[in-house]
Image: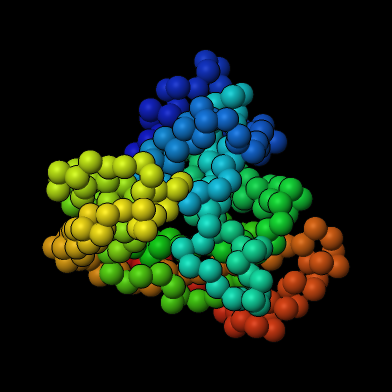
Length: 273
């Protein structure tokens, strides 16, 4: 992705800027709050990140800037499925590092410095203390940035091993796509069902608000779409975790609990084919 985008990215730099001389100290990290800036982050991820998609439950947006030029983005989201790797209260303190990318001309170490700034911001300003992340062997990812940031490595046994071709876009998706609000709206349109906004709350589908025949038709359409979508087999993903408290004592206690409850492995060194 970096190689493909480099020529165009460099052409957009201000005159006189030699990107090869830039260092991490030349960049500014920000927590993103405005809709316009979030939209820019989303477009950046779609252009520079391998998957080119955004997770459904993104909760925190971060941007990395050089002279107001967006040069990096990291998104934190609700986990796909809450774990108990820090005990029964894990769901209240865990966030997933769901997407991240830096611009093609970014200097070495920018990504890891940006990552740690985001994690420290989250710990200082929110209740979250556990940050999980995945690396996809299909994209030849090892989790190099997570290794550079001293994440714990939990092995290569995570994520679905079956994905589907999205019938609307042709992109790869998990089985969750077929049960998302946006997908149900497409099914409704195809079935000639007028969508009622009272059927949803945020991203949730309020099935009890629908007529029974409508709910049945939409659920059946979802099953048929998934059954008919071409399947693609994938290797399991690498999983990483970072634990950090607001104080040294809190960090010590959380990490002690984490290590007592989880097996930690040596970092992988061989990339997927």
